[in-house]
Length: 402
Figure 1 (cartoon, rainbow, N blue to C red):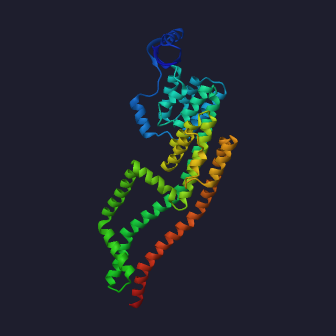
Figure 2 (cartoon, rainbow, N blue to C red):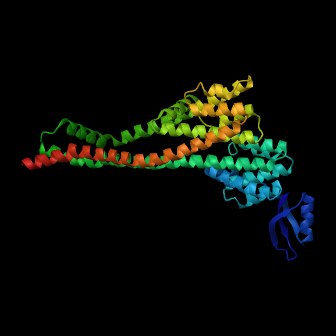
Figure 3 (cartoon, rainbow, N blue to C red):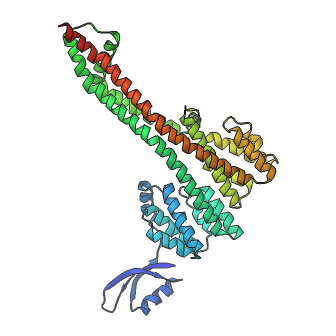
């Protein structure tokens, strides 16, 4: 155990620090042997519950943070460093305040006799069930090092996949947002000033110019109401998506979107295959593995498919039977699973599925980046051309007639 202390030295100067000892009494004895008089000594723990809550609110533990933690932990464990010492070493050097506090608390729990998987399981919002299940299986089988390795590899794959999807969508999202902001400001500020010239000239203009003039006048007078409606709509949609019915609806919409829907399907198939392989290889029974993966996949459509697979296996059936009945599972996946079930190498078959769809995702992301840019440029060009024909061309024609 580690104890924080304040003590006086021979010159009555206050010293503070941390001492390692198996009990408080031995900690006091260690201080006395170093000519220190203990004033205050208490066991070192993570932050207080209030401090942890504040850190949790401001600093969410992301996949990258978990990836670094499990990589470091596996490196120490494989070097035969005891679990508690490994956790304390990582907790001391982790810059993420909330995660550092959790790691120190986990180290204290393990030191008090709690298993590592149980200690992790107390923080389900940070450590997914797939992690605790694999580690628990490793503890039961006496192969914790291999279980940590599986978890580190799984965390790295999940982080890499999520980062790819995020990277593919950030660029078009940024361009579209910028275009909408510029368009809004143009309609509110620039268009009314240009249309004012047309009004002053009292010239005949086409219907589409009248439409632009009307929109410009309305936006100039009620731009604040339009913003309220837009933000209200966004908040309402976000709230609805958080409800159970809304979440299911959004999960379905994701998979039906043109182009991007296919990318999301590949994402969930890759998550399913990769995590299922990790859990199975970690020694978790197949039905329990399917139930855990259903939580990890994070899509209600695929979650339902996987849970039906678990029910089918419980009754003595095959996973491939359920997969073959779903429109969201490609035929190649079903065939690979059938081969795995027949040969008894389901883990290897699904590993190949995961690798295949990860490569397909890479190709789609590359093509998406190449395709989106010209589409956005053409869209913006058409918008500018419409404004030019609706406003600038009529002004030019009227000026020519004078």
